[in-house]
Image (cartoon, rainbow, N blue to C red):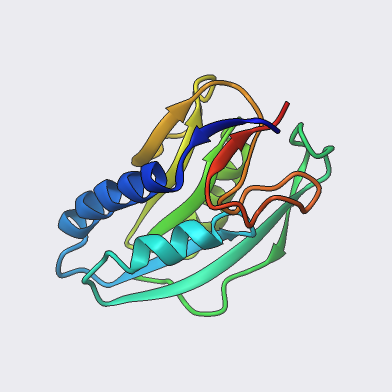
Length: 166
């Protein structure tokens, strides 16, 4: 690691702007915000503090059989703990790379009779061309990044900024 991609202040600004759009879109709706573990936990914590909505929080954990820098086959390791039928669901991802997780989660939740499913990600890579992500904080180059919840072999999640891993 060496090059800072986004400072702590830039991340705060991105999250705040996204929250304003989400606030408008979900006004007077029952919302369940679901973070994809483990990477989206910091993003979720910061985002929901900006939302003046009645909302529930839950988590999904998806793992990949690939190596640390290349995604592989996905599996569900931890499912939701509360019902989501007839509720509006907002899925939070730290970063959308290939779109494989977005597709997997969409398929998983579409069988649960939800009112709607939308996706929000802090970062999306330039090469991403999968299922629509409704709220994108920032599009970034196709480089591996760490910090603000994102890791390399379990390390660097605690960085308050996002750095490019070299």
